[in-house]
Amino acid sequence: MNSAHPAATQARSPLREGEPVPPAIPRPATNSRKAGKPKPKPQGKSMRQFWLKQFRTWHWVSAAMSLTAMLLFAVTGITLNHASAIPATPVVVSKDAALPKSLLHALTGDMAESAPLPEAVAAEVDELVGIDVRGEPVEWSPEEAYVAIPGPGRDAWVSIDRASGAIASERTDRGWISFLNDLHKGRHTGSAWFWFIDAFALACIVFTITGLLLLQIHAKNRPSTWPLVAGGTLAPIVIIILFLHT
Image 1: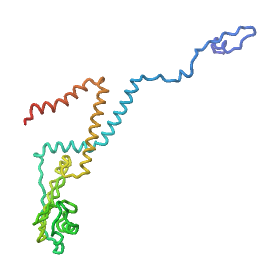
Image 2: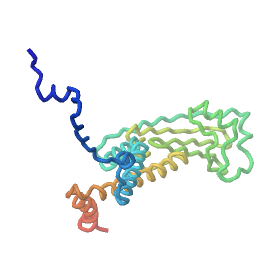
Image 3: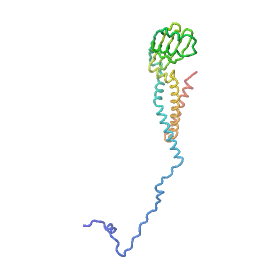
């Protein structure tokens, strides 16, 4: 039994002799070039996408560069604000010694202002009392040579009697919290840390400004953006005006 549809069978059957050929169904004309060509984006939208990409790039790069230091400065900001409530017990170590008589001649005569100790004397001081005074500036007086060696979270000093060679020294260690607090303040941290703070501050400025620009771009879809920015700006100003008295 043939179950094919009559119309389908008729469509597949060849034309009979003398039967007219049916007209071909016209196809819509297409332009291959126009069909595959994307529509040009509006100039304003493309510029917005360009700057959005730039701001995002600078924002995350500056955030990555300043992440660890920002966390350090935020935590030490809390510890500095509550310094009186954080207990600290400084560890003080005092040592006395005497230079060999063979080195006393190195301490005689006129010394230039802030000139460091002679290398042999500095090496002997380090050996006797455990404080490295090499290259440190010295306060010279007719009676003594005094070396102060402050550092983050610690202090040390060495005094040498120029006539007898007697050495008195003291080292004070105030602990890790004090060390981190001094890093925050840049206290006695040297030139390398000085320049690092400047570079970190610059990265924070870039991070903040690009964040503000990103807020401006997305503000239309986030109605609370500018009220929050205004609140964060006005809060310290109001506190300064109303609660700080000079």
